[in-house]
Amino acid sequence: MSNTSAIPEIELKEYEPDIAGIRAHLANALQDDNCSGFIKDLLSRVSYDGNPLVEDGDLLRIFDKLVGPGQGGVVRNPIGGGRMDGNFEGGNATIHLEGAGSLPDNSPEFRKEYLLWSDCDKIVHELIHAAGLLSYSDYQLAVAVSQMPNSPPMPDMPVITENSTPTERYHAAATASTYWNAILREHYKKVPRPHTEGWHWGDS
Image 1 (tube, one colour):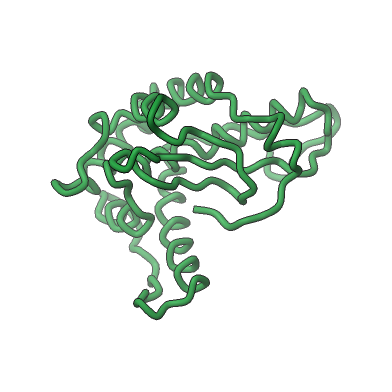
Image 2 (image 1 turned 135 degrees about the horizontal axis):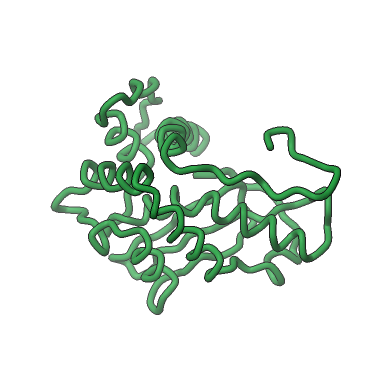
């Protein structure tokens, strides 16, 4: 789930996602039983006969399938955050990842390091969307998470009708995305952002 924002054109051309680096991070993250157990439980709740799991819900295998032949892959695009489009059934499952914009250190080395961190930070959320043959929406995932033990109740969700505006639709999806992602973050460990000597992010 994301909104759009401008990123330097150079990032689209010269800083494509580091597929091997993202995969290595994903493999390491999924070794954590708390993380992998939460994801397995979530996917078992959100899947159904009409929209079964891809690769039995194994996110590492789903990642490999998504970046392999016949799908859209993981790409850098002018968005804010991350977004999963398409689905495996349609042969167009694609994960879009944002650029970095202005950084405290604009050297190519630091930008590459930062973008790898940023991409890894978003990949699990987007792969969970992609895990369904037809993909799973933020609302579907929010409902599934709300049914898990110890989850807080879902917030009030805006009612969407055929007459809802794009802004109203975005707000509804953002509300659902924020809810289930916050609970995912309790299980998927956030790696501190990279920093340069003498300079740190406010949350690091």
